[in-house]
Amino acid sequence: MYECCVPGCNRAAELEVILYDFYLNDGGEVLSEQDFTCPYICAEHAVKNEKQAEGLREPRGSVVYPYTNQNKAQGFTIYRTSICRFEVIATEVEGLAYFLMVSI
Picture 1 (cartoon, rainbow, N blue to C red):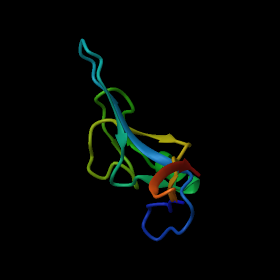
Picture 2: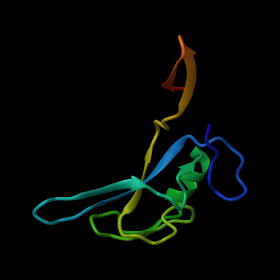
Picture 3: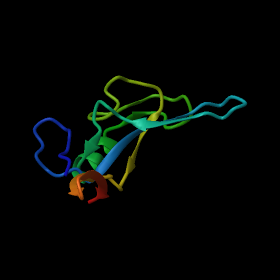
Picture 4: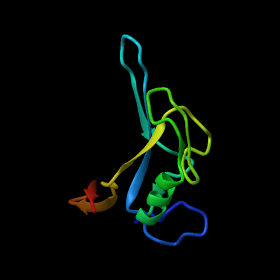
């Protein structure tokens, strides 16, 4: 389980934080990557993050948040509710090692 990445918060993270932007060129490129300045956040801080956000949520816009996008990249924060968690299980059968990745 991941913890909320807001300093001082000990709650479980319920959301994965994604930095999103859309490039208005012929290719219509999309940037959608985990926000490494605050990769996981609890619901309470996500609500605060959005209420206190300042800026334009539009392609190539810039939004200043209290908790996410601390590098001030162009784009805006979106949240993904499905935090993927995996566990690796190692086992040996008849002298051969097997490694299984199981979603938890």
